Image (cartoon, rainbow, N blue to C red; front, side):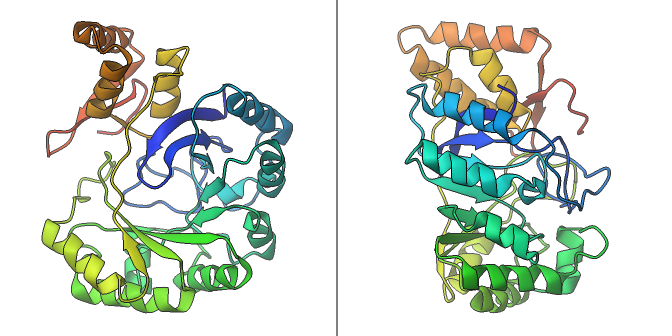
Length: 316
């Protein structure tokens, strides 16, 4: 499949079937922590980049395969709401299945009424809020010209006023950037105006192209949970387990996942061990064969965690 991948284990959504509606990388922001790498050229106008019927057919095939799926998650190689047919896809997907639909977005286009209308049928929407001030917004999210902090917050507030589904705001916590008490109180003040159902605290665990992006300390995470929980329930999700048991082509599945985000080798190894519990050596041989195919390469972070990315990945 071209647009549908997984299911993959999600920190927020269990076994999540991903639906990528964009050509890489199409985004309104150039976030310092982005797992997709740098935004080489901003995209700010909505477009139907691929035929929506083509994407829907892949969703239909995936949900009818018998694979265990907790959520169908629209997530782009960039900013998901840039896809102009998103509202139609959400509506048609909900006709196909009772599996709940989520949309992961940076929220930058929620200031547009058309975009807000497109998302109203989703069961959960997960926008980003990484800063409570213009200065930190520009430093972390690095938006395209015209995408101001005030515009971002205004869009989030207006969407909350219209949306009756689950609004789960993501806050990416970065060491030495937005994890101070002052920065967190600023974020909490903005969250009070948005009124999300929950706040999902996320950490930059996957490789970034920016060398200055580091995991916050445990003390910083605790501080964030204490300050933000005064506004809404704070969730620091535990990562789920990758499941390959219903995959008929492991290499194709792993390839489709790594094209969207780096894949933790420890997670992949665990999934292969579960697939072949009576022969752990076979899992090791499969890992070696996949690396030997030349389709993948590995990246090792400062904490020693190893991630798989496509061999064409240019991050350092």
